[in-house]
Amino acid sequence: MAADIAPPLPAPPPPVAPPYSWSGIYGGVQLGGALNESEWRLFSQTGSGFLYGGQVGLNYQFGQFVLGGEGDFSGSILKANSICAAVAGTNCQTELIYLASLRTRAGGAFDQLFIYVVGGVAFGGFQFSQTAGLHQSWSDTVHTGRTAGGGFEYAITDHITGDVEYNYYEFPGITLAGGINPVTINPRVSVNSVLAKAGYKF
Picture 1 (cartoon, rainbow, N blue to C red):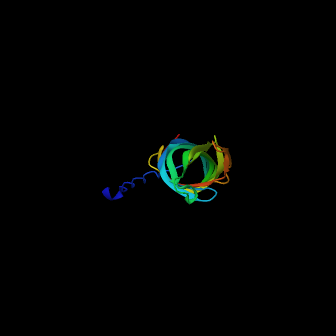
Picture 2: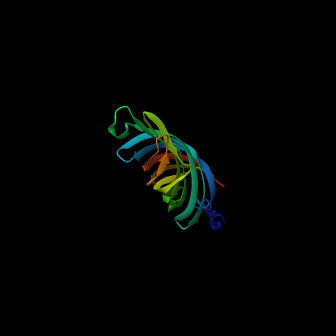
Picture 3: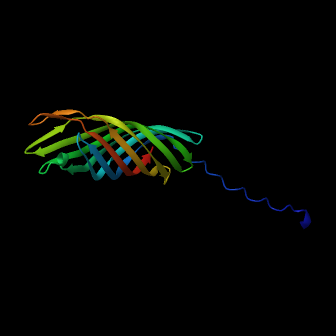
């Protein structure tokens, strides 16, 4: 009789968790460093500093491909100073006040890892000043340029993500006129930034 008893069935395998989905709305904060190069008419100058701000966006995933859009805004602590055109006793300064952008984000998802590129339109606030006997400065509300970059993002939990991103910004031909002794300047400004981000996906 005992030989006729069937052995117990093996336990079913544990359920396989579905792959992480990057689809959804997200927001977060960002902090990092930046290098600025400003090319004035007869000379150029470089500076370094910090960016701090936040971002919001939307992703849609189909298969391994993720497509989305993101807007971000960063305040800045960044100035570049130099002698104006090698003239002793003068000082020219470029100050970056803020950076913002509207960008497309696209890349590949490998479960909890997302590798992507970004590109779009950039907006910057700058203050240009010159001291050569008299002090004069030029500023404008918004300068428009372009930006491109890339990065990788990792989903720490279902909702919390961490991200490292590089971006290049270019603002060509910023033409400004005025000052105490009115002159026209036309600096070209570029910014390289590396940001660490923390996000929450809803």
